[in-house]
Image (cartoon, rainbow over all chains, first blue to last red; front, side):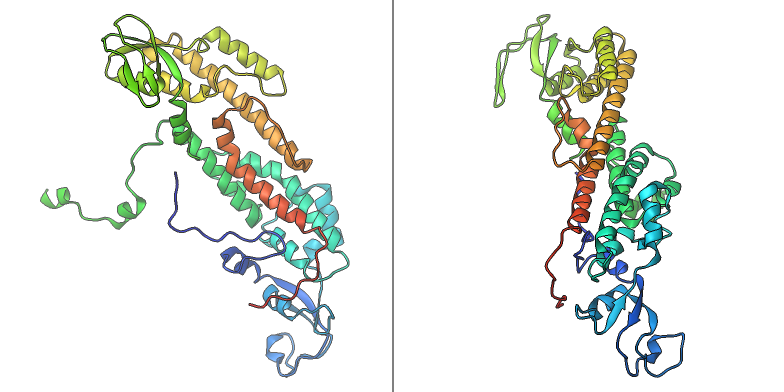
Length: 211
Length: 185
């Protein structure tokens, strides 16, 4: 059985993030378009497009998710978050028509994660966003399953390219299952191979020294 | 679970052999194995049968379902029905591989049998995938599949469970939740 000495913390899918998960940390770097509801004095250096010393009220700027989440309050005195393009009405109809054609990696590699986090910002369209995210996942599931289970020993980079990071995790899991079965069937399951660490390290072998 | 572990479990199945040595009844923890007399068939577990065969102490009798016509019937039945057909042994894939690798001289038409079993496997796995897909698309909570073998379940287990987990979490997004306080870490 494959036991790992290093178990990475998986991303918390859905509205909660896992604090220690690298995927979630990278996810929170995604930028969201926001509008400031109050002035931020002497923080003008954050907004590169103008040279003010302060950020006046009503500025539209892009903030990373971690900052927007921290500053957002229910009473909305500080910040109001707008939806990125992919979650708006236009793209939602595209997803409901046919989710499989969209290149989710290009649209921001964390479509599902960011979509779930957006639900924190009480937006009137939250219900539709959540529904669309779920339906997109379901629609693309078939394609992900087929490509994961059928690509044995081929170059999979073309298949993996349009997948979101969540789907890539699933793809990898599916591939592992397939590879394990094929290895077993070929009889190579108990075949001893030198660890790649040892091979790459190129230890001098005693037989080479004596020759 | 590893396919090797499933194979290990499969080796507990009984198979008939014809030994060429003699030995009294042996008493093992798992059960008794009858007295061995040369030329008389006896039932033993597969692990013992393979070991004896490798030491050239016996001849393995193929199980009665490992026969070209029976397998062709099973394959045709599998292709016609939409649900999983009943198969003669819950470990058909592993037994085929083990017996055909070690004892192909005792099994007539070994190559055809291998091809037929592969066909049956492919059909069943395709049905499994179709079923998993409709499970997810219809967002069912519960599915019942009869006549699946452990090996087939094992190949799709992690993938299906992970996708179902993700789907569940995405689904709970839609529940209206109480306004959570902001994080305090």
